[in-house]
Amino acid sequence: MTVQEDYQPVFMGKVLEELQTVLQRYPNKQAALLPTLWLAQREHGWISDRIMAEVADVLGLTPAYVKGVVTFYTMYHQHPVGKKLRAGVHDVAVQHLRRRGRAEGTARTERRR
Image 1 (cartoon, rainbow, N blue to C red):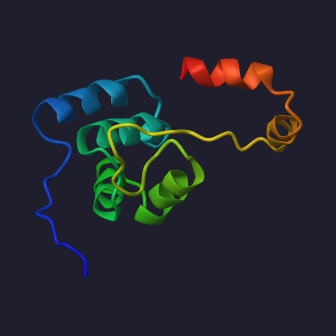
Image 2: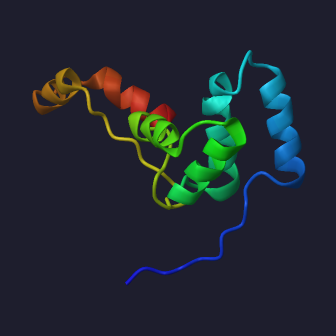
Image 3: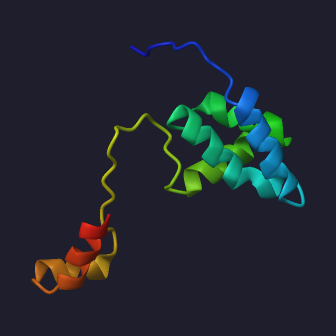
């Protein structure tokens, strides 16, 4: 069972003003896609299909293009996330070193996060 939520447009008021500022820094709207997605994710917490459609509409892009970008980059959340997000190490070499007890440097890196 899915829960229907009332959709609130992201780009209204101050967020729309921020978007206009972002758009001025780029040569065209397509070039502003990544920072526009950051704004949307900051405001909503994650990027739903409806938000992707709104971003596409605002930038004059297709929803499929926006979804392709969102699904390519792991920094964009396609589902609600908790307050704390733990990023795992996916590097095969680091995982191999961990198994062998030689990943002192990676432990130090993880403490900084």
